[in-house]
Structure formats: C-alpha cells, structure tokens
Image (tube, rainbow over all chains, first blue to last red; front, side, top):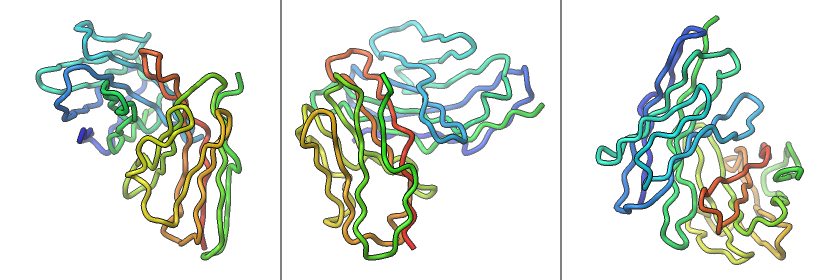
Length: 116
Length: 115
C-alpha cells in the first residue's frame, strides 16, 4: 500500500521569506500523481499544486513550486515570499494510476505559521 | 458550478442516534470519495465510488458505517448507532476519473460531534 510521510508537524517562517515543506512517499508504481493541498482555518481543502510522475520538470504555480525527486520518492513544497494568507495546514497527497487506485492518500500534514 | 456541497455543516447528536451526512458532487464528476479527518489519524479515506458503484470500502471503520450513492448527483454516509469516537470532520470529494490531472474537489466538510 502507498504511504505518504510529512516529517514536520509544524513550521514557521517570517513574512516575505521562503519556506520548504517536506514530503516523502512509498510506492511500487512508476506512474502516479502527487499533490499539495492547503487547509486554512475555514477547513476548506484547496489544491495548491500538482505533479505528474512522468514529468521531469518541477511544477510551479506563482509563488509555489515543488522539488520532485522521483528516485528518492521525495516531493517538497517551496513557498516563496510568504504571505500571511499562506498560514494553514498543508497536506501532501498521492494518487496512483492503476485502475481503481484513484484515491488520494494523504500525509499527516504540516501546520505552517507566518510571523509578521 | 457551486462545487461539492455537503450538508449539514455541523451536527451534534447523542450517542446511539443515527446520523446521516449528505453530499452533492460536482455535476459531471464520476468519482466520489468520503474522508474522515481527526487530530489523531489525520485524513482517512472511508469509501469511494466510481460511476455510483462502491470500489473500495476498506476504510469504513465498522458495520455501523454505511454509504450509498443512488445516483450521480447524491451520496450519503450513515452512522448507526453513533458513538463519541465518531466525532470528526467528514469530507466529501469528487473528481472526473477520466481527467488526467486527477484533481479532487472537496466540500466544506461536516463537523460531527457525538455526545
């Protein structure tokens, strides 16, 4: 079974600085999808960024980028120019490509605090 | 589209009572997921459906939990009888299975408190 591990329960960063959240996963599949979701206090789950495993290029969405290391099974999220609105729980998630394995498997989450 | 709609947003019930959580997925989506979120266990997949058919219910904790999807626009998660340890936030999510990007869209969740 696939597992996702986020080893940082909490992180904090000064506003306008850069922070990196770590995520590792375990799978025997060669093709899969990885995601970072954000959960603010409103509890809404919001997709931040996605990465297809067959793509070597790291995904980028404005201030958010990932460092995808397929061999190491690592998928970290970098937030540049941190803003107060980035404060939230961040979840790393995995989705397989085998039929029927579409479900998302989540890590335990990292609580990110932005210090003004 | 209004997104995934869950009701109620909050539910407080007494131990032993039946609880029914409801979900309306995004129109056109053919996969639906029920997740439970607790501090101790994080986000757990309870069950998911493809084209209204349950595919994997291995996450359903016990027989007190049941889920149905009678049509493409509605699903329910029922707990009977409810217990205090069922207190959690329950999320419904939907996605388009054929869509390569696999993004799951979440509802706002139902916070269930069993006293």
